[in-house]
Image (cartoon, rainbow, N blue to C red; front, side, top):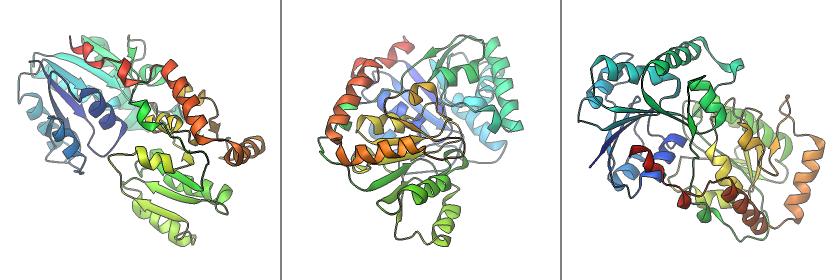
Length: 346
C-alpha cells in the first residue's frame, strides 16, 4: 500500500483541510497529515474518523516546529510527500532534499497574494520557493490559475478543482430569508470587521448577521461589535464540521477578503442558491460566476447591484437558483463524483 504524507499549515477548518478530507475519504492508500501549527481543533477527529493519521506539531517555536516537521518526514518511508504550504513550500522541500529522503514530491498551491498586500517576508518566501521548485522534480498543482502562477511562476503546473459533493448543497426552499453570513477564519486576510461594516451599511434594518469562524481577530471583532452596539444583530459561532445546513440558512454571504487562492466557501454557497458579495481579490473563476456581486474600490455595493439584489431577494425562488447554479458548477467540473484525484499518486 502506498503511503502519502500531507504537510499542511494547521487543522482549523480551512480550505486545505476540506480538500484533503473530501478527496481522501475511502482512499485505497495510507495517508498521514502533519502540521506547521500546534493549534488543535476538534476537526482532528474528522481526519481520524477516515483513518488519516495526524501528527500535530508539538511546538510553535520558530525553529523547533521545523525540527518536528523533519521528524514527521522521516517517521516512515513515504512514497509521496504532498506539500500544501503555499509560500513556505521551500521549507519542506529543503528538509526533504537536505536529508536525502527518497520520495516523490507533490507541491500544491492553495493561495495567492495581491502584490499590494505582500509583506517582505511573504515576498522572500515566495521567491525562495520559486527558486527551489525549478530545481527539484515535482508534480505541481494549484486550486486556480492565479494560485498556480503566484507560486510556480514559469514552472509547469496543473489546476485541480476543489471539487465537492454538490448535490448535498441543493435546496428546495422557495423564499429567501433575512440572514447575512460570514464564514471563514477570523484573520486579517478574511477581513471579518469589514464584513460587519458592510452588513451595518446595507442590511442592518432588514437582516441579521451570523459569523462562523475562529482566529486571532476574535477579540478585535467582539470589541467592534460591542462598541457599535451590534450585539443584538450579530451572532458569533465557532467553526463547524458540516457547514451545508448553515449555508442553506444564510441568504447573503459576504466575503471581503484581501486575497484568496480560490475561496471554496463561495462555490459551496453558490451551489446552495445563496446571494454572494465578494471583494476584487478573488480569482477570475469565482468573479465570473453568474450573479456574483463584486465590491467597488471603496467597498461600496453599486446602486445597480443593490437594486438587483433586493429585487431578487423579494421575487426569486432560492430552489430555482440552487438548481441553476448546480448545473453551472457541473459544467465547470466541481462535482467530486466525476473526479479521481488519487490518480496523481499512480
